[in-house]
Image 1 (cartoon, rainbow, N blue to C red):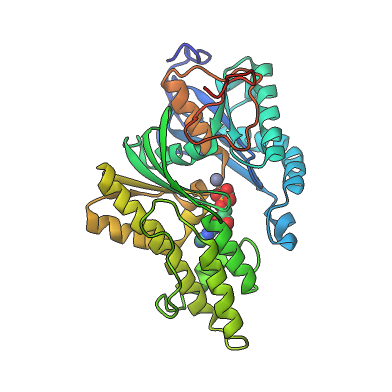
Image 2 (cartoon, rainbow, N blue to C red; image 1 turned 180 degrees about the horizontal axis):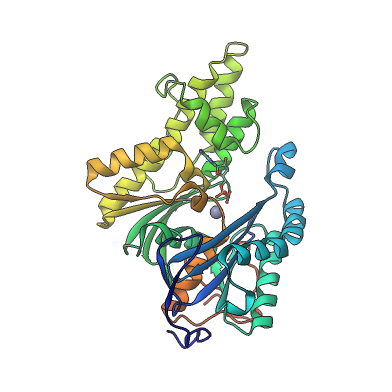
Amino acid sequence: MPAAVTRGAAVTGAWRSAASPRLVDVSEPLVLGIETSCDETGVGIVRGRTLLADEVASSVAEHARFGGVVPEVASRAHLEAMVPTVRRALDTAGVTLRDIDAVAVTAGPGLAGALLVGVAAAKAYALALDVPLYGVNHLAAHVAVDVLEHGPLPEPCLAVLVSGGHSSLLLVQDVTDTMVPLGQTVDDAAGEAFDKVARLLGLGFPGGPAVDRMAKDGDPAAIAFPRAMPQSYDVSFAGLKTAVARWLEAHRGDVPVADVCASFQEAVVDVLTTKAVRACREYGVGHLLLGGGVAANSRLRALAQQRCDAAGLVLRVPRPALCTDNGAMVAALGARLADAGVAPSPLDLPADSSMPVTQVIARGALPGWHS
Ligand code: KG4
Ligand code: ZN
């Protein structure tokens, strides 16, 4: 038990939670995780590597008519959802606030106003409960969540994190400390591209699940959409989106929607999996991890599996509910940090909308806290 987390240390024994059939070691820290970086108010409760609760209140329906997430709408929704979602998580886990040993919260990156709500709530809980507070990096949390499903993280590993807000290729040497960015999007995030193409096709928001569904009846080789930046680990999807728009303009009134979806989707997942496998080879790592909302994409999962098998790599993909933004991933990273004895964040930690991926844990708001 690290010095930073001592509450509950005297309690030993084992019990089974409703959410997790595996025996729970109650000598491990019980961590409350809060995620509000975008449009999901996520509250997770984790003991060690065991998931006890993962409650999410999404404001996605409130953004649908705008065709994208409206930051101010998201912030207000977080405010309303925060306390009820924490209560639901506690009920699901069968614990009370007094049982919590540490609080973890997404400190960045994300929407500034949305992050502020989560960070303020987490500070209030940590202060009131007199427990350590970990302000964590959202991308590191997307990586850490996989331990809840597949056990200890093989480090180093390669992580491809793809969502509506981010597309990153990361070399994860130690998720509590060292994440090396190898590539990222130079324009649209992968999920953003799915959402924009779905909009062009009138498929609604969020577009990823709809494109994925439609693509099942289409031919991925029907239209040769471009694959940008083949030599780099960076990715670019803006040109692909424009190519789809041009193709639709040229074929007005006669659009095979399923073929467009399948061909567009194939271009995205081909680029992501090609670069991921190449990076695994170049850096000599044997495990590839997928995360973020786009990791729910059925074709991305299938092609990644196929290419990993061919290259002798092990693929790890958390179940879809753990791929999209959630509080469990934040709690999982908090538990890992506590276990590693990492010093908690100070109570003046800021919400940092552009928190770099090289920084796993937030430090104080005073000058020099980025160092
Ligand atoms: O991680 P997430 O819940 O939130 C952030 O954006 O951070 O990801 C949401 C994104 C949306 O752009 C959505 O269209 C995309 O993930 N998405 C998918 C699928 N499910 C969700 N994209 C492709 N295929 C899917 N099945
Ligand atoms: Zn995310």
